[in-house]
Image (cartoon, rainbow, N blue to C red; front, side):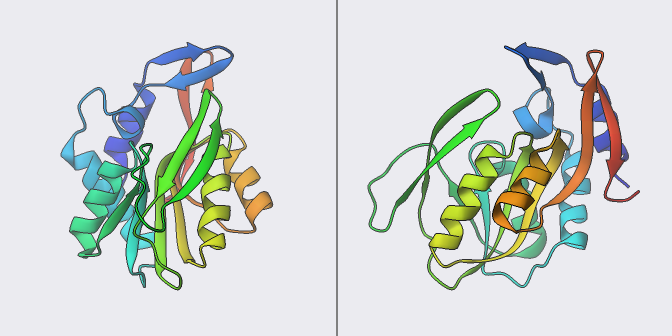
Length: 189
């Protein structure tokens, strides 16, 4: 399993953003085109390894949306997107996130105290986005049943777990070495 995912990641071009080695891949960037087989592999893997006794799947804009959509279609569980755009709806919550290559505000809507959720995002690298979101979602009295970062790069997963006390499920752990993506392990290993 995960053969399409591994092949795609290993063929990812690398772009430097300051000192940050950014890999360009359909999972994390939407380019090149996403092979439906790869999205199916990811969805089935999350399905197999996550607690799906949940009310909603929650995705982070933008690169969590396709992952949440595929998982929603697999499970018939609705999903909500944490957006980069403010709407001003009743109950909207603002979250400040800082990543390895920038910072911005995110906006949480349509999540209600006591709901059980699965939070999914494409990559955990520095941990900034997930730490901020997990703390906010906990403050909103949501039950975080599963936190999924499809790709783990660097120490981000460890940082998130240490700062929040919540386990993060990663599907693929990788690093960028000598300008190439190197897969260190997968959840299937």
